[in-house]
Length: 74
Image (cartoon, rainbow, N blue to C red; front, top):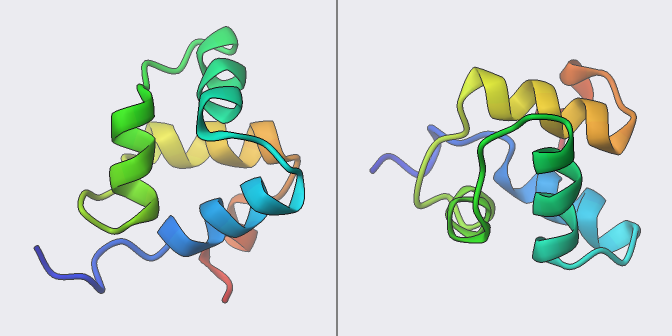
């Protein structure tokens, strides 16, 4: 996989660390809102082994309380 394809992985990890959330905590917050995501998928997004879907991006922004565009900023 092209490692440049996943632009938000590092940002998701950074926002999660800033909040002192575990991957399980973030996954639970997303699942409560209706997002079908697992810890394995989140780990793969954060480490750029898979690409986040548009649905994941929407839920990341919602859970973190940021604009979608913020997820694409370094």
